[in-house]
Structure formats: structure tokens, C-alpha cells
Length: 135
Image (cartoon, rainbow, N blue to C red; front, top):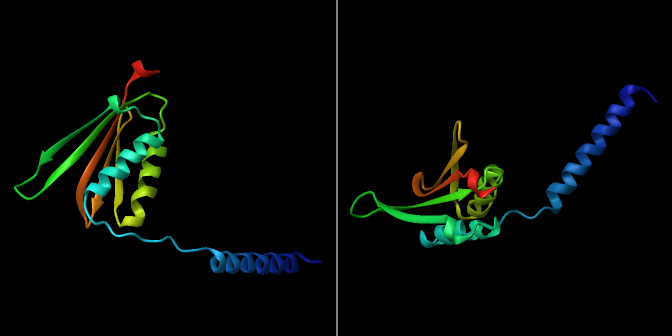
């Protein structure tokens, strides 16, 4: 068999596999966000899933104006804690509700700031600070 025949056969197999995956895969079920308290619940759930004890997580509210306030979560985590995995998992939890996350790493400490956006407005923030004493 020539190289061209192998390529055609491989391409045919790849296309068939892609069609089968698209046909069998269920779409992600989208949920509606009824209140911003659901964001707090999903953030707290993510903290629990990453086994961060509540005494290391602090939450305070910042009043933006008379109608809007934002909750900011600050957490001290060990230096070897995977902040990127936390950010990815939080994003996966919030995405079906139409919310998205934007993260920024601050060097040299590698602290991570995650902002939760809904309708292009920051509603919640999560700050993860490395603490070398928690090794």
C-alpha cells in the first residue's frame, strides 16, 4: 500500500471517529443564574472540593455603589497548591451558569487573582495567596 493510500485511510478513520463523537456526545446543560448567591455557593463548593479549611478562607464585601456590592474571597494556600487547577475547576463549575472567570498571576509570589464575571460585570473575586508556613 502506498503512503497516499495510508493517508486517505487514516483520514477516513479520523473523520468517522469525529462524526461518531459529535453524534454521541451530549451537550452541556446550561442553567440559569437566579441570584448571585449561587456564585457564592459554587465558590464555596470549589473550596471544599480542594479541601481548603474554612479558617484559611476569608470573605468580605466591598460596596461598589448603593445598588451593587462584591464579595471578595481571600485564601491562604500552601506553596505547592495548584492554583491553576483550582481556577480551571472553578471555571468548569461556573460555565454552565453563563459566568466566566478571568485570572491573573502576580509574580514573584505567584499569587492568583480570579474574577468571576457575569454579563461582563465582575460579581465575585477569589484571591489565592501562597503561604510557605502551610507546607
